[in-house]
Image (cartoon, rainbow, N blue to C red):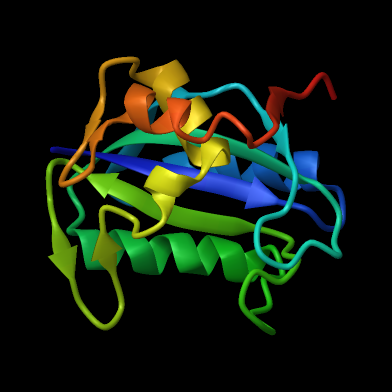
Length: 160
C-alpha cells in the first residue's frame, strides 16, 4: 500500500456537491480506500480571476495502484462530473489533482510528483496541513512553512 494525497476542487454547477460526491467516489477506485478527508474550504480563483470562488478539499488515500494508474482513475471521475479542459485555470465542475504519492518524485509527460504548483497554493496546503500537520513535500520542505509563505491567499473553511 502507498499513501497518496489528492486535491479536490470545483467552482461550477454546485461546487460543494461535486466535491462531496467526488470524495465519496474515491473509495470506489479499485485497490484504494480513503483514510482521511479534510474540511471543505472556500478560495478565490488563481490565474484566471473572472470566475466563481472554488470549494476545495484534500483526501488521503491508501492505494495499491501505481501513480499513473491512479491518475487515470482520477481523470475518469472528473469526466463523469463533466470536466472540460478549455484553457489553463478555466472554471471547472471538478478538478482532482494527484498531489503526493508517498515520497515519490517523478516527471513524465503525463504526471509530475509532487504536484508542481502545490507548494504555492494555500487552497492545497491548508487542507493538507489539516490532515497531516508535520507533512513534508519532497524537494520543497514542510507544508506548514510553505503555507506561511502563502499568507496573502484567502482560504477559509466553508459552512455550506
